[in-house]
Image (tube, rainbow, N blue to C red; front, side, top):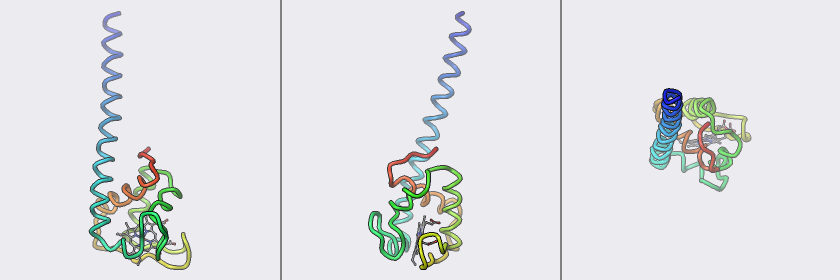
Length: 118
Ligand code: HEC
């Protein structure tokens, strides 16, 4: 009996730490992404809540679920550019961004509607 309780406690602890580790990681990536977005040219075309040339980043967050697959997909669009999703105006490519930094930016954008990464 004692063994079973110990085993169950170990499993619970592992699950808890796994979940908290992932959350902390995603949160720090979101913070770094915000700094990167502010330092980049994104603000010429994107406002957090208002549509300017591009859709507001909060509207982008509402359109897509905050999943790792969507983080990767949006990061690729930030690097390669995007057109035809929101209207006629295309987004310029950002070939100098690394996939890693673009994913941080995508995480920041996807967090803006209050969702956490799934
Ligand atoms: C020259 C203006 C411009 C700049 C600079 C720009 N964007 Fe965009 N962005 C747009 C437009 C326009 C769209 C909508 C494109 C479309 O309809 O496919 C867009 C779309 C997006 C989307 C949603 C893509 C989709 O498929 O739904 C994200 C995310 C995004 N931009 C992030 C960024 C980030 C991060 C930066 C800075 C590195 C940035 N943008 C810089 C104009 C811009």
